[in-house]
Length: 512
Image 1 (cartoon, rainbow, N blue to C red):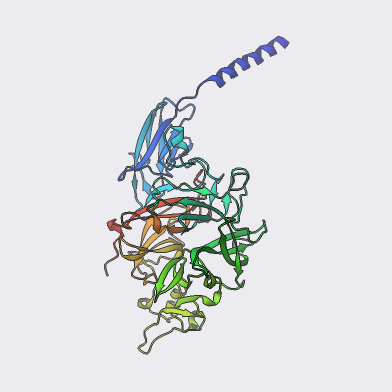
Image 2: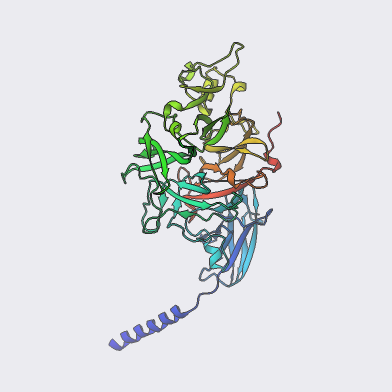
């Protein structure tokens, strides 16, 4: 009995050593490319018949090395948000590939979206598969930068020669909870001042001693609360020097704010500090969204759009921290408050609605404007923010940004729809107008996500190229607030960048 036992152990030992010494085969490379541009497509899922899922990296590559499936024919279902793969005679969208170690195959996928998915900006393994296949990556940190696994909602500004990125809640590898008091990074601007984001961005994170992204807004000094920032902007102080500011909110939960104020960047400490508090019941006389700078009668203003540009303040450090300095774009009688069907509409002697910037008057944007139309206080023709698609259906926006575009010589809006047909917060729309305050009337869907969220999009005008013909916008890709049956590995809760060609004929406004 004893000898038999020794024999079995020795046999297992020999077998184990042979197994550990066996060299794994080289992976098989599968690249998915856009059938029009031939560029690699990130975020394409390939799934085997036995439900093993793979997702393309930012270059469109998958490194396939599944034991038992090498040196054989393997069928892959192919799918991606806003893209379509040809179906075979049985209706399966996919293809069988001859898997051979060290070999490769290219799959062409047709883009349905008007905008083109460019790359993933944050999180782990951005170029994982490319590196496993021995290919070079365009980033200095292609696998894990700042120990960041996930990041929510970007705020971006160009400040003193660098592009500053700040995000909300941030995930890490070491524990299910990351940190919730704003994370940040900078990107060096080239001499031209314009970044080329084709393969991603080389973020230099602000990190702690552990190497993980550190808290950028520890104003509340209470670890149990979240601190978010909005309305990131560059203003002038009393000496005329540039200062970086934002609105901070101390959150007890997703819907309960227990404190807020002005956050001012300390260049020496590389952290936001409190520049004063706002009254807790102040809801709109604060920085918000993604502001634009406008000069009116030689006075510089910050117009805060989220996405509708109906709040502004002088572009000075003193003014953005003082609620009394704020004005609203509104059709209400000066000094009045919004009161639903009893609101007082400002009309001139001829009966024309007076839309204008007014102090101490409530702003009117899409939702309130619609209620006033329903109450008979406004006509549709008098509206400024009632977006419709080509079929005349309402497009209700949640968040977004407005920027001036040199190519179209108009203001353009990139917005996330609330209550979209494919996903509740995953449909992205494009619109254009002669003025930032509209009228905004016609919108075109440019990106769709099936049962997945892509919220808080922002267009970065300093990434525009070809005199504004090509623009880039990012948003947060997450299963949150969606009915996604499963989350996407590595991509979930991260920032994805899209590119839009404004020369695309599908973006032409509807005929009037």
